[in-house]
Image 1 (cartoon, rainbow, N blue to C red):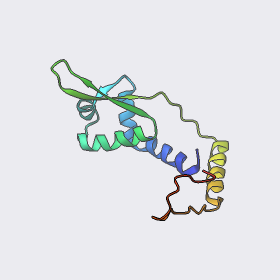
Image 2: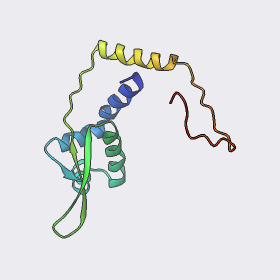
Image 3: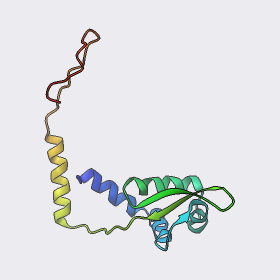
Length: 122
């Protein structure tokens, strides 16, 4: 994990609204409508926050059919532990610096007259 990924991960959990969502889901999976009522926000806003949490791996969502045939989107917390240490921060910054210092690699574009489908070295 580089510093940008770590920053996104920490930002996702640092948001007070997302903390409330995680707190509600800590007692078990809930469908979006129920979760929206419990945290007091609109479903579109809730979906935005859930997408961010799902993107970084804090929650997982899936669909289920209710007894009356309606599709329900359910979310649950993915077990995680947040421990930030100076060593973790140093590794993340070092990975970002190493990635930033990597030389650019040029890629040759095939021309329309090039009938070759193989690329040596790839």
